[in-house]
Image (tube, rainbow, N blue to C red):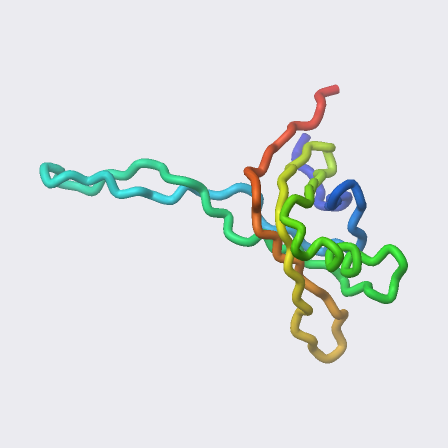
Length: 134
């Protein structure tokens, strides 16, 4: 296979699908470099530290006028850091984590759709599960 198209990526929170997802953040992170240089070294030496993915920001169409609104669903999760999020890729592999959410309306422009950003603050590691082969 040459790769996967982004079409079909899904995000759920506590088992509830979140419609109108437009963009996802990078998943994972690069370990910070921790300086392990000694006074005897001629060059700096580093060891891998912890990963800091920062806030995971997902972009959605603003949809508070809809019954199955992502905005309303996520707003009900504010202050609930034990909420479980699952990002499912088109091949059925998943990234699962718990997070607290904060919401903000994106800047508005002439002749553009209204969007909002769900910023997820991790409360657990991100666990990857590969798609079943078959």
